[in-house]
Amino acid sequence: MWTLLREIASHAAHLNHKVYLVGGSLRDLLRGIMPTDLDLTVASGASVLAQRVAEQHRATVVLLDEQRETLRVVLKDNLHLDFCLFKGTTLEEDLWARDFTINAMALPLQADQPEALVDLIDPTGGRQDLHYGLLRATNHRAMLDDPLRVLRGIRLAAQYHLTIIPETGVLLRQGTRRLASIAGERIWQELSKLLGNSGAYPWVELMDRDLRLWHQLLPGRLRMEETQQNYYHTENVWHHCLRTYRCLEVILQELPLALAEGQAVLAALGQPLSGGNKNRLQVLKLASLLHDVGKPDTAVTQPSGRISFHGHSLAGLPYAHALADILKLSNPERDYLLHLVRYHMQPLHHYTARDHSDLATYRLFRTLGYASLDLLLLSLADLTATLTAGERLSELTPYRSFIHNLIRQYLARYRNWQPTKYLSGADLIKMGILAGPLVGEVLEKLAEAQITGTVKDLQTAQEWVKEHVTT
Image 1: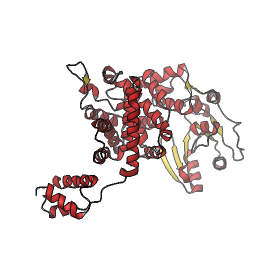
Image 2: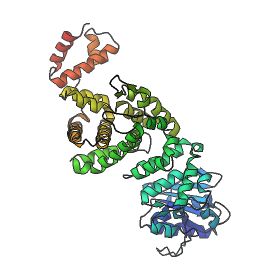
Image 3: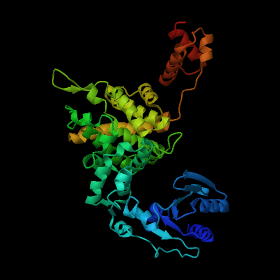
Image 4: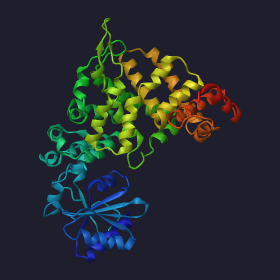
């Protein structure tokens, strides 16, 4: 990396410019982490410098912001070099205009510069704050100038284990009240980074307790807190969802120890959703906060005094739609979120039904579909939250074993498994079945008959159709 930085400095010198390494890339460098993206700033000529570097490396240049002359050079191995002009007329003005002190440092690059940080420019005291683990805003307007910095600050605090100083906490609260002015795509981009952190719960809870940020983001958040539960539950709906999030993070951390297949499950959750750079885990965590949002609309007090919430999974779908609209989720992210909310009760229903036959399990995984592992873990987190809140730990052990066993079955048998089709839709039509929905229904019933062993080959498949289907 230092060789690359010296090359950039050499190009800048030929243009009579001074170039500085700034922002998160410099912060990581100070922490002994080699950055994968480099943020560079100059007083003028950012586009010319970016073009020179791109030509040397035969790389692509992408214009990010024409007004601020911000460009990205994409090198091999997906290394990004972001070039931009100062915010203001001087470097010091630029640094004071940034969000937090740990991001407001600059390193002047020299063509003959050794691998050292002795020339660091640090007007806001960011290096000392980084050393002592403090998150401090650079100025009192930092959050008002860009309210998205509220989420970025929380994400940085979670990522680097920082303590938010009281004055900055006040600024975060002020910025939260203006978060609605920020584009949903930008909010989701920053929020997803926070949710990708393995131990984000304390910060997710702080967003609620100190900042009331979830009031701004989650449709139905206030009604969830106002809706009490009883019988199995000892917390209101919102605090149960918060606890579910916490339990989910702990379950994920323990999974490699609790289950031989744990690493395989985590690898699956880390896979990106199609058409985007967000992975399943980030949306799964979001769903854990929203999974019971339909309960306020379905709460009915029975004559016994017990409150029931029949149909709350389906009732939660409009709220999940609304959240997807607020955050401008991609279509795969939206579909996945809706799927998790809609089917989060299915594993528990399968457990209480007591029919754990191959056919019943096949039907469960057919319903859960591609999100089977995700929904099994969400269900375990959901019931863990309920039972730990009520101090009913003896009921948790059998359910945990049940979910772990389903995970093993899914990975060993059902993940990429479909019964061999002995008959096609065209074959059924030739046998006299009318084209239409009935064809699909018969094919599914045939698959189930194969699960139970009734259908074993082409002949038994044909016999089954003749016996069970009226043409």
